[in-house]
Image (cartoon, rainbow, N blue to C red; front, side):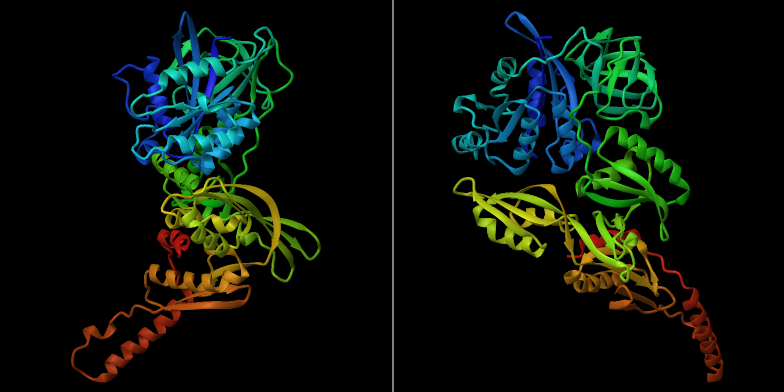
Length: 595
C-alpha cells in the first residue's frame, strides 16, 4: 500500500490540465504511441468539440522509480465553475493535488476556489507552472503569486510544459516524494467510497470507488450502506485506459465494480460499499450534497415521450450526479421536469447531451433561481417557479438568494466591471490589489441577476481577462414582482418571470417587442401584453394577415364585394374568440438574450 499514490489535477479553465495528463500517461508508458491522441482522457464528443473537460476521468499508471514500482491513480478534473462538484468528488478520492497555473496568465479565480477545496480535505499541494514554452510566459511574477497564495518555497514550484514535455520527470518524482500514501487498514471490514458511476447498456451500472479499508474480491456479496441493497460482485478491477479486471482490489486502490445493477436510483455517489459477511457499520463521511444554482423546466417536444425523458434523465444523473430534477406540469407545455443545474453552461451541456446521447428533443424554459415567499398569515412558501408565487394580496415579502462573487481582473478593467456589477444590483464588499496589475473585487449580489448572461458580459468587457467564482451567502429581502406575459389576454406560464420592481418596466417593454418579432402572424390580431398582477405595463399588437376574399370578383356590382367583405368580418370576429397562438421555441430562448 505504501507504493500507491492517489492524486488529481486542479486548475482554472484552459491552464493545460488534460494536456499535462497526456504527457504523464506517455511518460509512464501507460498508453502506446498508437493509442495516443490530444486530450486522451476527454472521451465525450462534446468535450472534444468544445475543448473543455466536463467529467472527471480516473486512470491508473504503473511506473518504476529506482527499484520500486509505484501505482499512480490520476484523476483529471474540469476547470469550469459549473463543474466544481466533479472536482470536489475527485478530491475526496485523493491524497494529493497538482495545482497547475498558466505561466502567461497567472492565478485566476477558479484556481483559488479549487485550491481551497483541496486544502479543506488536507491534500498535499504540488504547485506546477505550466506553459513555460509560451513567448508570453512570466515565470518570476507568477511564482510570486503562487508563493503569496499557498506559502510554499520558491524551489517547490515545478516549471513544466504540457506541450513539449518539460518538467514531467520532476513532477513524477515530486508525486513520489511529497504525496502521502493512502491510510487504511487492509484487515478491517471493507469500506469503499463511490465517487462516480456510468451506465453501460450491456452490463448495467458500473460504479467507481476508492477502497478506504479492507479489500474487495471477485464473487463477494456486497452491500451499499445508504440504500441497503445487496449485490454480487460479478467483476471487480482497476481503471486503466479501459477497465482491467482483477481478482482483488486492495486498500488505497481506485477501482470499479460490475454487479448487474439495473436501476439508476440504486447507486448514489458518496455511498459506501461493504461486504455482507463482515459488514462495516459506519459509512464514510466527507461528501457534501450538491446545491443547484439555476432552475429551469425541461419538457419533451412531443408529450408522449415523457416516460422516455424520465429514463434519459435518470441515466444522465448516474453520469452527472450534480443534476437534480422533479416532475412538474405546465399549462402551455404539458408534463416535464423541473431541473436544478450548477450554472448556465451546465444547463446547455445537459440539454445537448439529452439530444445526442438519448435522441430526445426538448424545450427548456427560462432559467431562474428559487425564492422564499412569506404570506400575510406568516406561512413560508418556497418558490421554484414564478407561477408558485402567492397572490399579491396575500403576499407579505419575498426573499431572494444572494451570492458572494469574487472577480479577479486586470487593473484597467476595474471601471467597466464595477459598473456591470452595480447595474446587476451588486454591492461592493472589498477591493484588493493582488499585484500592481491584478485586482480582486468582491461583490454581494442577487443570484437571479447573474443567471442569464452575466458571465458572458463579464468576459466581453474585460477582453476575456476577468475570472469569476461565487458561493451562496443566504437569503435577503427584496422588492420582487411577478411579470406575466399575456397573448390575447391568456397568460403564458412558461414566459413569466420574477423580477425586481425597478427593472420590471424596461424588461416588460423589451419582452413584448421581442415577441412581436418572433411570433408568426395569424389571420387575426394578436395582443401581446406584459402585466404585474392586474396592471398592464407594456403592450404590442401583431396585426392580422388579411386574406384577399374579393380576388375572385372581377367587374360586376360593388354589392357582391361588400357581401364577401361582410362575411369575412363575421368570420374574423369568430376567429379572434377561438384564435390560438403558437409560440416558437426561439421565443423562449430569445427572452434570455434581451440585451
